[in-house]
Length: 227
Ligand SMILES: O=C(CO)[C@H](O)[C@H](O)COP(=O)(O)O
Image (cartoon, rainbow, N blue to C red; front, top):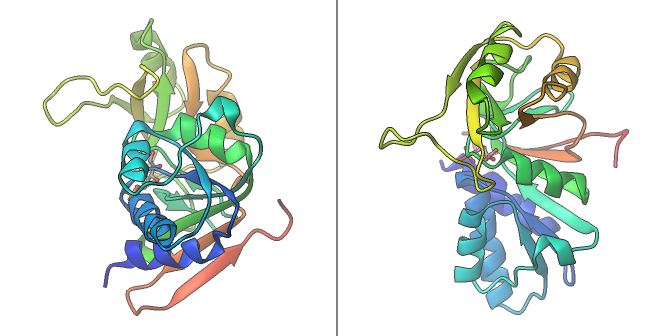
């Protein structure tokens, strides 16, 4: 059972004619982009904004009209993946290296629909290393500061062994916490450190999470009091 594809294709049911759609990044989001592309080929008219160069290229391949972010007003619906989801629908994102654009697009969206398999739903965030986007200048010092939050920080590298650079020209540090006790507080404290651009905690940003199970069941978890 391809649970990523199952969740992604279900979420695309929420895409309606005329919408401005935010396109997430990663393998799950790619299934959603392809499904949206199929619907565009069948005559659906939407406009979209992408959260990474990778997703933009995929969308263009499917003839999905891409609008530069500067020309985008409010986004009706963003569909994106996640690395972990907790019971309050708080998330860890950024495993695919696109957390900053993903967070900007999510913040501009009326509805943020997260698509995931059951394996990413956790009681507490933190088993997945928290990605933190940092500026290249003085990054060694920023990494030291990150260690003072009680994690093991690892500067992300490419498969070839080079330092991984985001679409924004920054570095990513993956912070191994094991468990994050207070995600909202950590989010706030991390973003107060000079040199940190943003971190992969998405607090109260998801409107709903589509969870697909190996059994083929799909569950939609909603965040009642927001958006
Ligand atoms: O946050 C992300 C990219 O920055 C992705 O949504 C997240 O890493 C999940 O990826 P995948 O769908 O490939 O498992």
